[in-house]
Image (tube, rainbow over all chains, first blue to last red; front, side, top):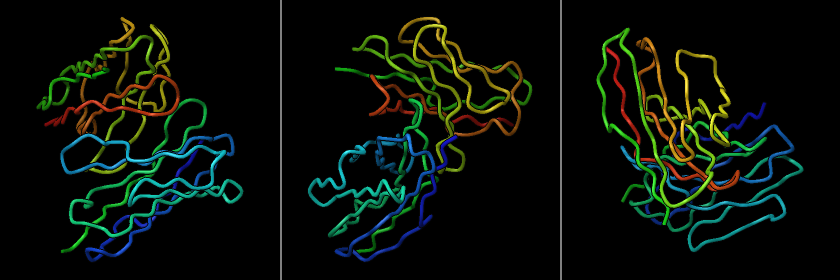
Amino acid sequence: GENVEQHPSTLSVQEGDSAVIKCTYSDSASNYFPWYKQELGKRPQLIIDIRSNVGEKKDQRIAVTLNKTAKHFSLHITETQPEDSAVYFCAATPEGKLIFGQGTELSVKP
Amino acid sequence: SQTIHQWPATLVQPVGSPLSLECTVEGTSNPNLYWYRQAAGRGLQLLFYSVGIGQISSEVPQNLSASRPQDRQFILSSKKLLLSDSGFYLCAWSTGYEKLFFGSGTQLSVL
């Protein structure tokens, strides 16, 4: 089955710096790659997604890149703010189900 | 608009007791429904998913079961809880196999 690896598990940056979170997947049939943000005690919320026919997608300070050949995709957050602090999850969708990475705890220090 | 309801928000149960968590979705028909478990605030583990009434796929052999008695209702059950069943349980829905929307979750503590 699909296996999604996510790195790093924790990430600490200064406010205003950029943050990058990377994921790899194993199933070449996966064709949809969302990213979720989960604040403490709350439900995960979709923040951006990308399909396999696109190499990059951007939404304000957030961007996602996909390399299907290498089977990896990344989340980029620019000009980080304290409210970006949360746990971020990547996911891949083989066979009609979302398989998540283990999460990255991002801490943005003022 | 679509909404998802999940209850209860918190639950404390003794070892060996039964469990029933319920999730309902409003504003859409024939959604895909999912149960995930999250331990220690990390790692969303897919437990069950359903693409229609009575159709349940189990991802991980365990002490839990799921049922979908109605189109927009998904139930997670156990006959006898174990300590290892403790965790944060999240119900979710999607209209295809892509965008997933989560319920507010149930924090289960088995003592």
